[in-house]
Image 1 (spheres, rainbow, N blue to C red):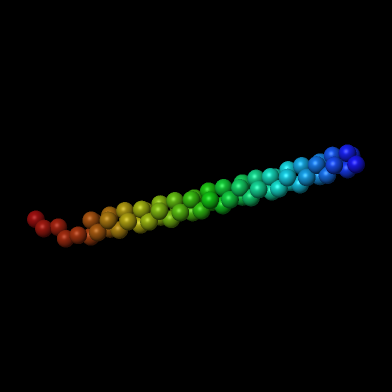
Image 2 (cartoon, rainbow, N blue to C red; image 1 turned 30 degrees about the horizontal axis):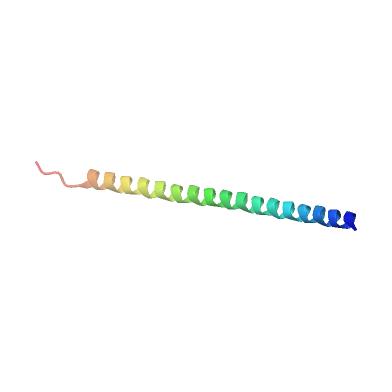
Length: 67
């Protein structure tokens, strides 16, 4: 009887450890997805900044100069 209880506890521990492992893997995946999203978001901001600077430079170069 005692051995069955100990065996049941061990199976419970293995189940709990498995669940913890799965949760940890899910957290790692969530972190990686979040980092990828931040990278894409930063890349889009960089492109917007480049376009804004190019537009400003183009307006400056094509403005009418009066002497």
